Amino acid sequence: MVQAFFKTHRYLLEHLEVPVNRGLMSKVNWGHRLIGILGARGVGKTNFLLHFVSSKYGTDKSCLYVNLNNLYFSNRTIVSFADEFQKTGGETLVLDQLFKYPNWSEELKYCYDNYPNLKIVFSGSPLMRAEEGETELEGRAHVYNLEGFTFREYLNYKTGENFPAYSLQEILSNHVEIAQNIVEKVKPLAFFTDYLHHGYYPFFLEKRNYLENLLKNINLALEIDISYLQQIELKYLPKLRKLLYLIASNAPFQPNISKLSNEIETSRATVMNYLQHLKQADLINLLYEGDPDQVKKPARVYLQNPNLLYSVARGEINSDVLYKTFFNCQVGYQHKLASCREGDFLVEEYGIFKIGGKLKHREDASGKFWQTLDMAEVGKDHQIPLWLFGFLF
Image 1 (cartoon, rainbow, N blue to C red):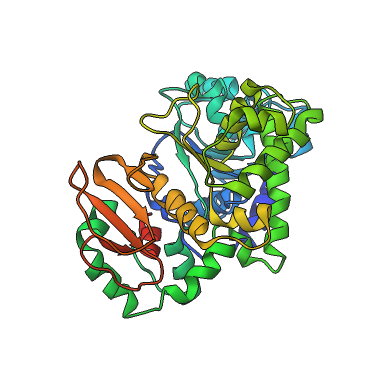
Image 2: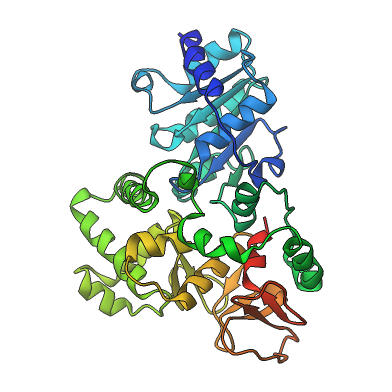
């Protein structure tokens, strides 16, 4: 039966289009035997897996891509399928949409322990990290997060350029020269507004309504990813939807948990749980003063990326909110951000960051204070163009 899946495998590879080489591709250590690619709905996990298969194996039958949404797996275990695959010469099994499969962590553990010559690459929801599987596979699985398109990836696609990524330290130390080199080739601000509206998810590559497609995926994340993995009854789904809408309409804001619990008609504890679920689904970001603590009320709540503001909140979007959401999304992927009263974000040992506003320069207690410039191509000193923070990965 394994052989029957190769027809679909070949068809998908023959019709695969890879307009942008995602930055994560070069960061994954593909030598590991068990690799997980987690990411929110719509960020392009399936294309990412197929690109890996195409570039490394082509149509070689030593590798097989399988979507576990196939009804066949309602009556066939991953273990028995993997056993047949490796006995017939298979070496790499790529399992897409793993999170809907029951007992996935136990079966992957069994495969890892009993089939030493078999490599498994799987994709799933970021909420899987909150499940027992993370403990079950500890020491076995190497898990990576696939984010949406960075501004750098979007700009490369739109212009045909191949700009590299930079570390945060490189940008802080050398942002003037980096920005000048980019501006010599393209006008990044000509693309920045479009990216904020419709550049984070790869839907912009399709000939469909971007915001409607995004809204569809948001609802699927609420209805399936969160409700299914967190075992929330569907009758409570309207409360979860309303909470997300309230966040989108007010973000970034300091949440009043009692007020939110009254508005969505549920307990304070449930609101706190819902906030964590929305964060785990990559729909919102939570900022704390000091170290994150799930028991502690967050100091600020943001949507996860600017595109969500347009899809969920609709209407006129405040540019200040957009810019802060962008910075939080792009910098927060690789660095721990905290809320601070002296500015907008405290970024690890790098200091305090003020997003936009009147130009000023100062030193804070840690010796670093940085300010982003909304509509500048090139900055100076501790004033850095906001768009350049989209080049971090």
